[in-house]
Length: 221
Image (cartoon, rainbow, N blue to C red):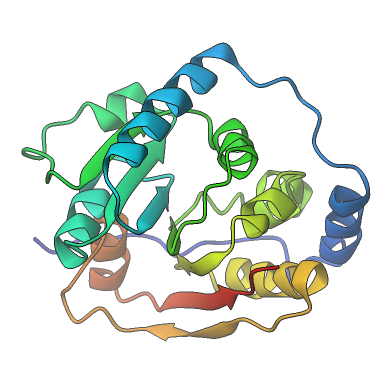
């Protein structure tokens, strides 16, 4: 099926001038927000499932309808794949039976990441696929790299992969990664050639938009 999707438009002419300041602030003032009970319960269930599957972990953060989680589980049959999204509606859509090595979890990512770090999770791979770009300049704090949880996300380590159809988002994310870790991420156009992980990836690619991928192997302490 062919799709038509508008490219991201923004009032930003380039990467946001405030990225570094927000990241430095997040490092100096770790997030203290109380963790919601429903996410704590969801995490405990996910952690119990993970411990029953003695395989390297892949975390699919913001998995939407869960197609990416299914496809990653098939692509990596010797890994455990956990997809996390906050929307009950998205997670509840029918896309066939989950592979045995996959789990879908309804939870708030901000709390879930903090609990995962606290529990010592060390995902081998960590995916952020087409997060909401929040393209208005005033909304930087709502992008993952502008959010106080960003250092926690990176502290989970592993091979982190971000995909987006907005180049500025990926460039800002790379800048924020370097501020926290001192490491430079690889940023390049992505050419799926029909091998799509998410419905958004298919829609954007088939609309003729350039897709972007950031990859970095985050060093472990």
